[in-house]
Length: 248
Ligand code: HPA
Image (cartoon, rainbow, N blue to C red; front, side, top):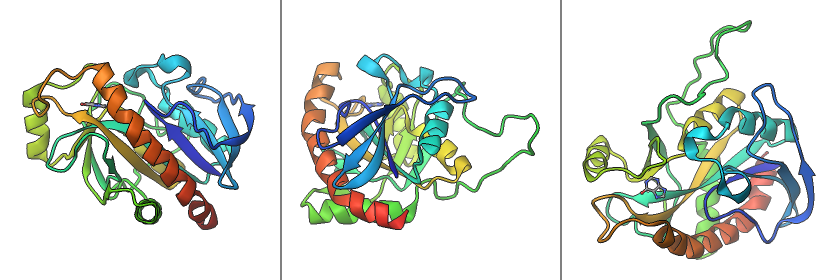
């Protein structure tokens, strides 16, 4: 099964068929909501909305551990995370898709590991390449085949939120090497690695980041830019699903 974690702007996958709702309890508490199991392009998928019903959970309140654990329980062998981001560097314009290749973590205070003391030995997972390369390759091939312009790599900077960044923070992030900025990329990617689930991200640029946008960044402008980008994400996921399934 392919796990899809959906973020802002992708609360529904219209092409998801034969839904069953799985309510999975975890040792870490409840996930963001029920997992919807179904088929996308004839392939079994487990779909979880990261921010919960009605977008009620802010990024720092998401129970990332429960979400990843529940997806594994549901049978997800590979995860594609969909995320809305701000664009920092040239080319990362609103509406564009990005399949990031690296990340930098600026989040704090989140339950960020399954290796949290207790009975089992501490685990130091290799995180040199935070995203699964073969999964990224399938997503990028699917984008190409579907005629979707997706940036082939980029560094995702994960910030704490829920406020947006200051212009100086974005300038610092750009100096650090970040191309895009979002609030949910971590600890999600690291937890997937700890569970041994190949994980890649399909990001949609919702806005130019702070200090790069011409006007104030509002939820309205974000939502408007996401509408087109998420339609591309749905086309891309439907194209990629059979290949992702064949690899799993
Ligand atoms: N910053 C952080 N997260 C985001 C942004 C942003 O500008 N846009 C969408 N998610």
